[in-house]
Length: 91
Image (cartoon, rainbow, N blue to C red):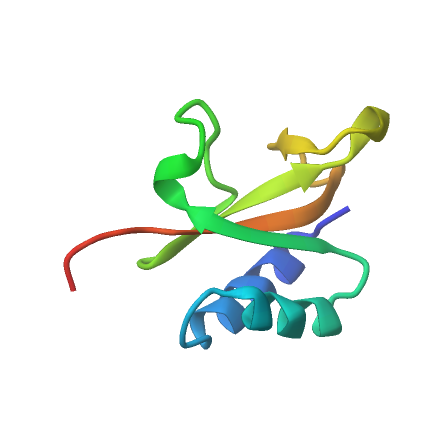
């Protein structure tokens, strides 16, 4: 389960990162060891899946782990992780 407060805290921590990479994910995993983290471009996310939280430079999507298979979910009660998807745009 992922609460709205935890998702906000993850977003704040991600916003403080200089870049999204494996080292950054390792830092997030230290703070939230029970959650799975991954990153990709927002362009790689399916259009039918709305982000759980949007920021200027990235969106957060929820990862569910039901039925022994990881998948995206919109249900925070099923969430076991987060995808940090960077948004390409003009600065």
